[in-house]
Image (tube, rainbow, N blue to C red; front, side, top):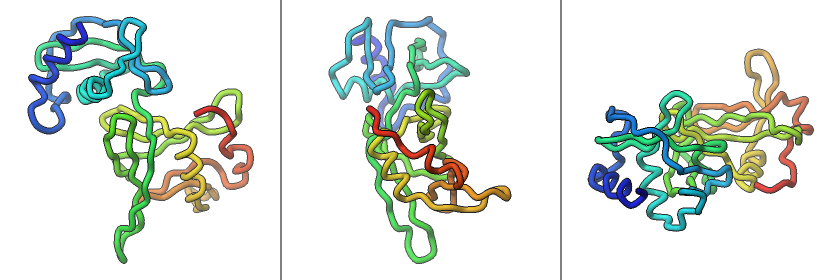
Length: 197
């Protein structure tokens, strides 16, 4: 099943990213594929060990409402996602020249590079039980990446305080966009905790 799906994806992909947002094939139901919170892809309970195969499947992943589906021109199949489908595992800060502000670029665990900004926002959610925050990056069309712990520390190191809607907020900037993490007066309670990524 996995090889057949991979063959269909390869045939449809051609050159460049597959236009999955344009495809509307019949729904073939769910398949026993799952993306764990640590970014590992599983099929029938076993990890998919081939990075090239994971990247191939990631290229045709789409969000349809609350459901994640793998899409080809001839079929779409639902899969399970424990948290979000991707991880942001590396970050660079690039100067934009004398007129523009520096921009943040992130590499995902499937080697996509995403430039953070208004269309690729950061969001920060409370982390249950720790009092900390879980950061996420919008990758494409409703698909998000969780920012791993070491990169989160890098984000906090770049943080600054700004007034947002009349409240002093601590957050991080990329280009012309500013992404608030927490009220500045609550910064200590939301600092990254020393816990597994």
